[in-house]
Image (cartoon, rainbow over all chains, first blue to last red; front, top):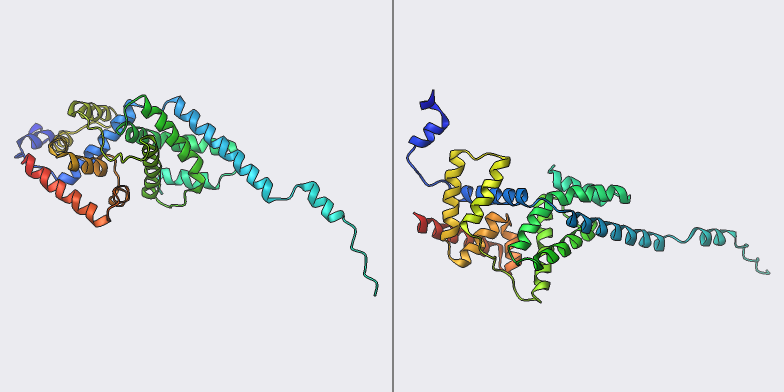
Length: 88
Length: 185
């Protein structure tokens, strides 16, 4: 029945000011959602992000390489002949 | 766990470049619009686009170093980067004042959001009231209300930005809210 519908109840309700904080939070959320809808992330932004991720990845790899000794250097160390025993 | 923070945590642990790229795309699809909004409210285009790209680059580069555990901490970290980039743009001058938006412009954004989730009459009533509160506020209060309610910055983040204590920001926002309520009553 129309008289019981939510809209009708809203229309006959005395107009009271809503909870200010709740209303402002709601407004903020709507504005952010509306802005995101009107301005979907452009390719330019994704390109910037991809470049930065690759740059960071290269830096991480370089740092890893610096941390670990090069495989050849490690092998050379293993192959070094034992120290000659000191004369007793 | 919140989707955004789950993606960020996974990104931190991911070693392969292909996986990092995929995760970064998902993360930035979620955060870019808010960062864009934040930057474009502070500077006008075309400079705003350049600053935004710098913000995105800095966030992407620092993503693996972000050590927080919550969505709130992540947003605080992102907004801190954005604020620093804005300050760099203005050569260290404070950039605390937002460019005020016209009420028509705000309603257009609200109507755009309604295309995704429709507005009930009660929602519309609440939003009209909130709009009156924001637009009736004096400039300083407008800034605080805007930062807290529209950008969604927590008291702590505003306190850090304004170099104030948490409590003084909380009280300022409370006073601004009371003042705005009186102005529209």
